[in-house]
Length: 241
Image (cartoon, rainbow, N blue to C red; front, top):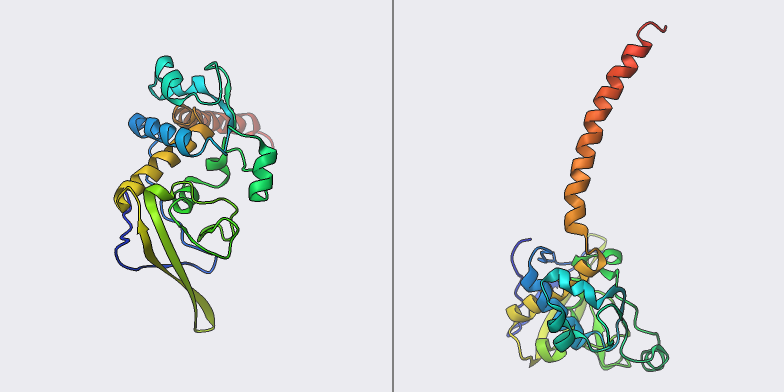
């Protein structure tokens, strides 16, 4: 699905949102890209698993994206001893609630509940905000309690939100500016987020790729059966007035 979106941080970037909120960018994830899925799993384990678990996904499920059991145990299994165990959170949810005001949610099905486009845009729209407890805010999810876990990769940005009235309708304008650089370029960071979203989309529906073709075949068969059922109905009822 399409090309990566690059954000230019060296100069202010303007983003115009609809009245419903910040405009979502199309996620370029591809569940058939095993290299991307493996990269997303690595990013998740290193940056997300400290706060967000995947209780409906077991470490053993990573074999389906091309990883061996030895690779899983050596590089990705930080919160369990056996590959058959779920990907649980790495610290106490009560501590998380005390620190952030609410316990970080489990992300097993977040890609299905929020959608990949939402996740892809959300992870790329954090900005510095001294008014919040964490010092971070988000254009897609205003006043979010989560700090920017990937800020060292993306860098720090500032956001100036301006509201204008045009023809009786309010128009919101988002002006982005760079505060400090991250370890990755804008295009590299977009690729990182793409891989992470790809992995979360896979976790939310591991058998999605296999199920969709089966669903198409089933619908086709039902369509053929409908034709025969309709013809049979006409034959039975042709003499009934």
